[in-house]
Length: 191
Ligand SMILES: *[C@@H]1O[C@H](CO)[C@@H](O)[C@H](O)[C@H]1NC(C)=O
Ligand SMILES: *[C@@H]1O[C@H](CO)[C@@H](O)[C@H](O)[C@H]1NC(C)=O
Image (cartoon, rainbow, N blue to C red; front, top):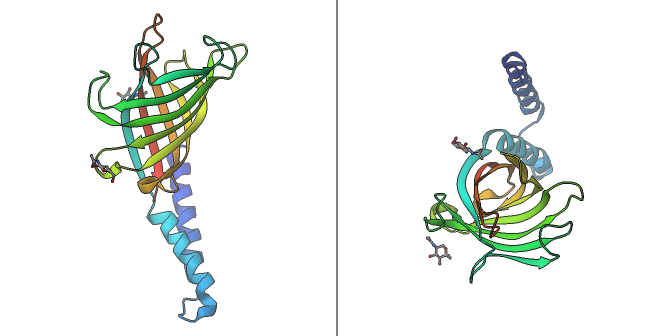
């Protein structure tokens, strides 16, 4: 959006909000609960929405004695191949850096003529104020692109009503073992 159309957008929104505020009579009678609720909804939507940016590394470990990414369907990366994951989310690219949470879910090879994964993943956070909160990601991961964008379709706890997007970039990949470390930047709007 250009800055002019952005300014017009803000003005338009402010005008709309003002018109709505003045057109709704505020009384304390029960009959007006609906109007009050509508007013609350509008105000909370406009003013209380927050944006949180998260940064972490997704450790996809397929090899060794304790893999956290296990193939449950198919062979190799052929169409339909599916992995169930309980991958660590770490603060730094190194696998043994501080754990911030886990990525639980699955990914499948979903393209017949390409290398693209269907990602169905819940990120569960276990540190600080985010402890116990989750965000749900559902998207297409064209793995050999430098940066892939995937939608955040929901959240729980601190991220209730969450929506946003994730940007993923593979930091390292070992073609021999299939292990990878992927950087994620997540931007999420929530209340
Ligand atoms: C996160 O929450 C769980 C369950 O309430 C608790 O057992 C755990 O100690 C908490 N972890 C941190 C790092 O606060
Ligand atoms: C994530 O954000 C950091 C800091 O802005 C940036 O250096 C990095 O390139 C970003 N990575 C992705 C995958 O967007």
